[in-house]
Length: 487
Image 1 (cartoon, rainbow, N blue to C red):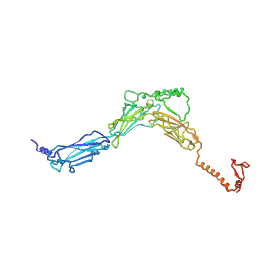
Image 2: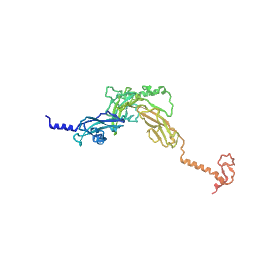
Image 3: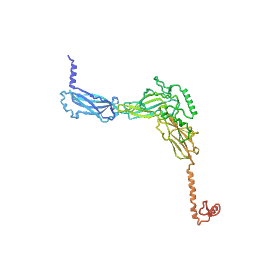
Image 4: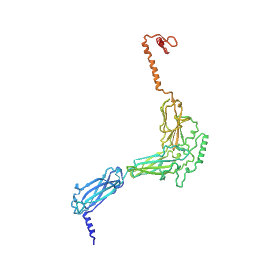
């Protein structure tokens, strides 16, 4: 026995026909590639329409991107005899020739067929797919955090490299290498406090940087005193890296060279020479275009002895890249600043500019500059000036021979460069030029007066007696002398 109602619904289903719709799945695609969306549907009914939608704003807005209306097409004329039941499979495609990140999102394919019972009704079915558009990172750079920063000789300080990767979707994987070897870093969820001191690893190994430093500082002071008595500087480890000058050179008598450079290479005994402990932290910032900016921060306790001239690289892996992206920097202390002074021949009253114009080497991170005057204060009365360029306005004659020291430093080391200011003579002012020009005009008017006075009179020198043509004294005519006496 069968329920009449159930039998009736089956008949209605048979009369209405059937329709199934599905969209072929797609793997993630890369921005710039051509993409084809395929909608497959199977039906025994007569086609009415096919509509593709782009869904935005979480499904609240559907943008129509393609429409096929069977009423205005003869492609399905062979289905006119809809009384004959047939199972046919169709496919509708939409091609995006150059997909963009903005094309990322869901798409829907809606298909309608005529009801088999009446041509006035339409049976609808739909399928959907999410188009995942990837984009490779567009830029990568490595910078130093909290720069410029001074060099610390006797106190350990934390140092942070920041790798900034922009333009990627999804977020890329970022990691660091040192001298070509991957760095095994301890992950951090929060940034370390600025005043927390050297970072400590929770693992069993404990660096010597974490012990009390008072005794070692005292030993360092005694070693410096002993070195001064010997006439040289204390020996430091790893002389092959060029961190310590040759002792034979240090014992030779020194002579003053302008400009001269003194590189600070004195490091405390408590600096541990083992491999440091690194800490890594990531942050992600979504952009309005759908990409993500990733910042990877590598922090460790800096050791200028072993970190100077170390090569650090930041590498990025991303599914849209065939090979990793890379940016690298070499930690280098400043050495041999080049000083340029303008004007080259300064005169009293001129404005003199003393500028640091590069170094003998590539310096990283960016150094800070401090200017001082040896043995006195600067022209404006200050003890020092911070900046790359020192400006001395309207220099007086008293600054002739004055010496200026430029200290360039970064966390890897510091260097001092001296230059001497030479001031030449008195500057010629506009008033002096006008007075000289007026005197020359008065002297040039004497010959014209003589022409107006008629025939020449005998010439007499101021000291008495006539003079010849070779005379070099200032001459005046007798007639002119009489004219000057008359009221």
